[in-house]
Image (tube, rainbow, N blue to C red; front, side, top):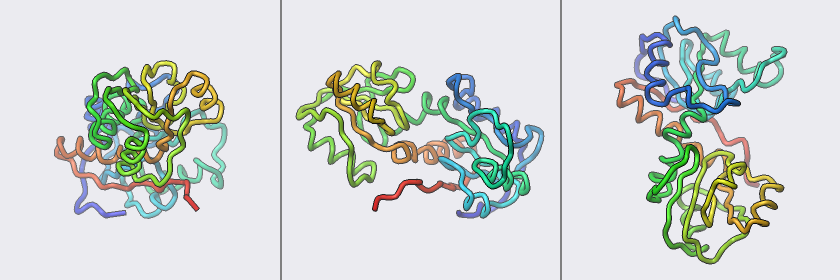
Length: 249
């Protein structure tokens, strides 16, 4: 992890208010847990680090008094115990000892920034509509052309595809795990990650082409978007991107 050239003197409440203007936390889904997860609004921090997730190596290398801004909440539901040999308590222990703070920007940021950024800037599609999580466009693509394009833009060696179509005239996308939204897609082809077996069976029965573009692979660009937003505010941050937990062997 790169080290910031100099520290920042700012209260967490100050950066929280700025982030809330960029992507209001009230937009998050009811089941989500975005916001300040570790820390104290009245405390100052010295460094900002951006990542998709947190992992042990990142936290051990981090300077004390660092504020992490991540996409995925480290804590999703109520914790009944803090067993420091288990996740996520093992990471929380390190954070408390080093005075590390954490703000998560998850489904609120998906709606306001991430899905559109991946759709337009990474994949190069022209967004014609967006309903919260789902971006859509129309055009003309062959199956082989689209598969090649997705692999190149997302750095993927292989793709899992349900109900492949030779000709595609409309595409929809939801980054991360969006298979539960398939009934709202209204397109020939739906790009998303973490497609489960029964989701695939449902899509096949509905003749909906689905392409699994990976959870990490489709959301890793969170750090790029957030870095640009911080720069617009005159705030320097560092990228502390977590590793993809999956390996291709």
